[in-house]
Structure formats: C-alpha cells, structure tokens
Image (cartoon, rainbow, N blue to C red; front, side, top):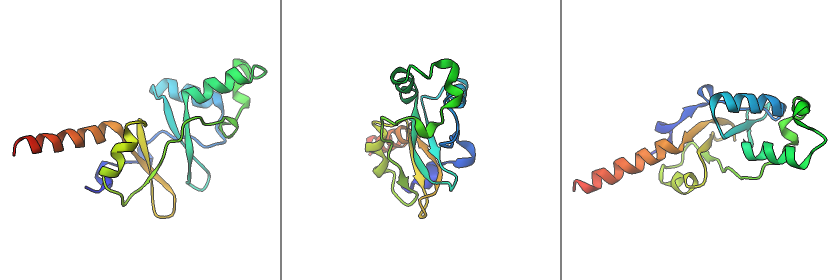
Amino acid sequence: MNIAFFLVPKDDVIYFSPHHTMRQALERMEYHRYSAVPLVDDHGKYVGTITEGDLLWKLKHSPEIGFENVHKVQLKDVPQHMMIHPVRINQQMQDLITLATNQNFVPVLDDNEVFIGIIRRREIIDYCFKLWQSEQKV
C-alpha cells in the first residue's frame, strides 16, 4: 500500500527551522509533549530531526550556555545524535516498518527532496495490526 494514505501533511506537522533557537524548541516540544521534531530548511528540505536528547547533550557539553542563554543558540548549532531516515512519497508501507522500530515518525519527501509531512509510528502499527487481523480470518 502506498504511504500517501498515511501521510500527515506538512501543514499539520510541528517542525522547526535550523534558525529556531533552543528555547523555542524546548518550549514547543514541552507544550506538544514531543520528544523529536523534524528540521526543515528555508528551501523546504528536510535536514534532520532535533530530539530532547540533542538539546540536553548540548546543554551538558556547553556549560557556558546555561539555561538562561538557550535563546541565543540556534538549532543548526545543536549536534544531532540520532539519524532519523526519511522516505520518498512513492514508497510502500512495507518500506517503513523497519524504520518505525527505531523512530517515532518517518519524514516523507517528494521527488525534489522537499519535506511534505510525516507518517507516525502509530499509523504503521495500526496498518500492520489490520493486515495481521485480515490474515487471521483466512
């Protein structure tokens, strides 16, 4: 099954620019209770995913920043420790199952490498469960 049926479009996804600050990321992630958020550059290209861990490691390894100065640090200056792999919109659902074991979501790109949305792990699990259920009825 084509993954387009499971796509949460970019307009409905919280994402950050590499120019957002650590403070902006922390506040929005806390508000929405997200542990990871995609990074999308000024050209709409997916450039990675920022995680809570990335932000914490940056604070730990940069004591000169301190929490009071996180508004001065842009996300482009925060090292990403997890590689969240994207897929293209024309891939099949089976292609996402392996990725979903290690990622809360899978970023989706169009043919021009432009970020167009995500597929959440819950939709992938639901798809697998329904597939399993249909096989059990046979």
